[in-house]
Amino acid sequence: MIEPVVVPLLYAPENAIRHARVVTLTRHMIEVKIMKNWWLDAALKPQFDPIPIDRHWNWADAVIDFEGTILQGQTVGLQTDDGEIQGAMLLSSQPAHSFIALGSGSLFVELLCTAPRNRSHLRIDESDLYIGAGVTLLKWAGSESRRLGCEGRLRLDASPEHLGWYEKRGFQKLPIDPVSFENVQYTPMECARIADRPAGR
Image 1 (cartoon, rainbow, N blue to C red):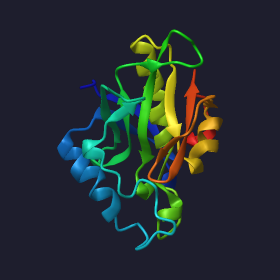
Image 2: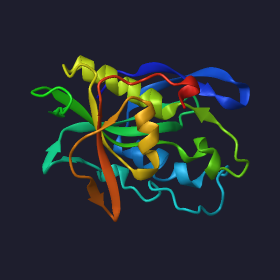
Image 3: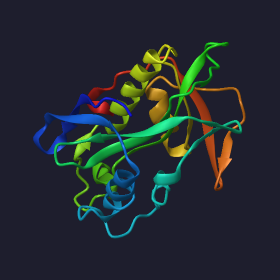
Image 4: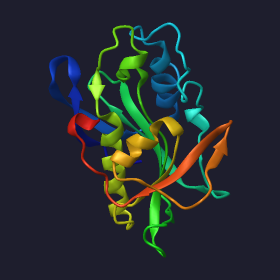
């Protein structure tokens, strides 16, 4: 379990910074706040085309399988004062090997997502709600990487539609084969330091 950390998050309707907390998510919180509440939000369109890649992810039983080895980790989320989770990810606490710093470690990021209510293209009103959940979680992951002796390095496998988003945050493609899962090719990437972007975009 991590100690909750207070971080800023942009609340778009008021163009104001609100505080959220990075917290460890219990299984109950994952099942209710993510797997149920995320997709039953009244602000969402009744149907999605295409279906979001994370629509049917099983967050409750997710593990980090790195090259055949299960890495220890924990699921963390950004919780706002209303108790809702605005973004979540699974982060290893056990290092994977680094490509950009040979002989060193890098923490592995899995299942990084912002809540559907924060994705304007999924909302009925097509407006922004909370902006920057993903990059806020990545920055926190970078600080965890430094705390655990990995000097801020992070690794992940990027889905095709988010490849450019990760590149803007400083991730680079690695010279290894893509990871194939459920007919999707994920690109192995690594970053030494998360780059700042305006408004978390």
